[in-house]
Amino acid sequence: MKTLIELANQYHSDKGDHVGCCHRYATLYESLFAAYRQSPISFLEIGLQREFCQHQPDCPSLRMWLDFFPQATINGFDISDFSDVQIPRATIFQGDQSDANRLREIAEEAGPFDIIIDDGSHASAHQQITLGALWPHLKPGGLFVIEDTHWQPQRDVERREGIETMLSIFKRFSLYGEPIESPYLSDERCREIEQNVVRCTFSHPFVDEKARPQKRSMIRDIARRVLKGKRRYSDQRLFKLIILEKKRMDDTSEFETATVQMTCDAV
Image 1 (cartoon, rainbow, N blue to C red):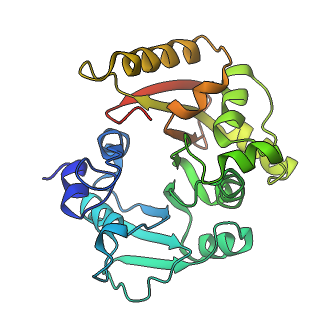
Image 2 (cartoon, rainbow, N blue to C red):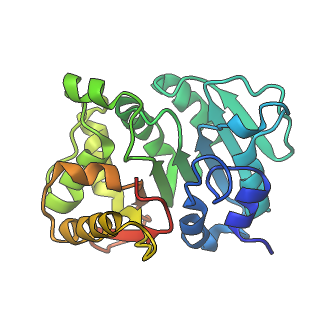
């Protein structure tokens, strides 16, 4: 049985370590999703980049997920037209991530979901709209993953307009006990997320001893400061993923914050 990173490389997904940005997210997802691998789950990925296979009708990440989850129902969502891609056991929806109504339509048709991955535009507003629209359609015990929280397509514009990043929102909530607030989420939805998220995990890059000394120092320092709950804006660019776990119906455990390392470029 192939590992997820082997499947990512096989299908030319940038979640592996051979293609494009070589995010290597597959190394973390391998363990994160292990319990779901042979289960008949419902899976949704937002953002279906196929930059590295433009000359053929394909979707690398969905093929990777189909092989990794042989019993799952796989769904994809993208602003681009993927009507030329026909993959058995996979359904691809077209729409704009900033359209909450469209997201809800898809969720009502294909959900509820066990796993949702937001690998869409990475714009902070879009990420918040997506979380608000899809959180009610995530099953109890399900996982909601927000990728590439270290990068926004218009970071300077977002700062100027005062748009808070997802990373900042969930650091305030999970590390400092502040309420979730967003102009793109209703107060009711914010309270619902607060009451039903049982674990918030932040990922940061693995310390590669062969990396530049400055890089090693930066990564170690970020892990230390986050665990101590200290604020610093430069933390933003060193975290790659936020993983939210939804509380199960009978779960009485207390909320937990965690950080995990993954093999990944630092910035």
